[in-house]
Length: 408
Image (cartoon, rainbow, N blue to C red; front, side, top):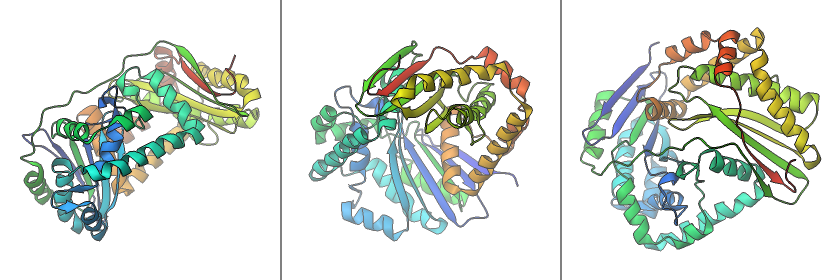
C-alpha cells in the first residue's frame, strides 16, 4: 500500500507533515521547535531543559492543574525532551481526540504561563537529574565524548550545569521563550487516524497567526583527534570513541549505516563476537551511526574491568579498522534483514512514523518513502560497502575514557 504522506508549510514558516495510517485508530504527534540546548546562553547552560518543563506548568486559560487534567482526560500519553537543536513535545491518543489536543499544544507554544511560583520546583528537578548522572558512568562518558566530537554549542549536554541552572531567572526564561518558540522552522508531524483537509485547516486556525523571527541552525566543525580521561574511582573503565562518517544527505549514507550494522547489530555482529564473546574483555560493547544535519559520525562504546581497558580499546579499534579488509556476503544479508525488520516495525507504530516524518524533514527537507529506503537496502553489496570504507576510513578518533586511571 502506498504511503499517504501530506505536507504543508504555512506562511509563517510552520511545517505540517502528516501520514494517514488507515489500519489504526490512534494518532501520534511530534512538535519540534528550534530551542534546543545549543541555543542556551553560555552562562545559563540548562535553560532549554528548565524551559521545556516550565512550559508544561500552565498555558492559555489553564493553570498547571487544569492543563494536566485536560491532557489526562483526553487520554494523551505525552512527553517532552531536549536535543541539541530542538525541544520536542510529543503525544499519542485516539484519533478522535486530536482536534481537542491541537489547541492545547498551540497554547503551549504560544501562550505558556511560565509561572514564577513553579520555577523553584522545576529548578530542583533539573538539578536532581544533573546530580543523578554521577551514578551513570556510561552516560557521563558519552556526554564528554559528544562535547569533544561536536566542538561548540552543538556538543552541549541538555542537563546543563549547576551554576547555569541556579542562575536562571524567570525574566530570562520568558525572554528565551519569546525568542526561540517561533513558527519559523518548527515542524509538526502527525501519523495515524487523520483526515488531512480537516487537520490542515485546524492547524492553520491554531497556529497560522503565530509569529516570530527565524532561529539560526547551528552545527559543529570537525574536531581534531584527541584523548580525554575522566578520573572516577572504582574497578570499571568506560570507553567511548568517535570518528567521522557521512550524514543522511550523502549518497553513501546507507552504505555507512550498513557498515556500522555489520559491526554492531545483533549478537552475531563483529564487536560483540570479537570483543566480548571470543576474548571476554568487556560486558558491554556496541557501535552506532549518529548525525547532526551536516555531519555523520561512527560512535563506539565499551565497558570493562579496568585491568582490561587497554586491550578492550585496542581490540575495538582493530575491529573498526579491520572492517575495510573484507566483508562476507552473509553479513550483508543479515544487515538487510535487520534493516527491513526495523522498517516494518516503524510502519506499525504511529509514534515511530511521526518521529520519522520530523527527522527526515529536519535533515533532508523532504520525507523518504518506505519504498525508497527498501530499494536502498536491497541494493547493498559487500563490494559497495568496502568501497565506501576505503573512501571514508575509520580514522582520526576522538576518545574518552572514564575510570580509575588513563588507558595507556
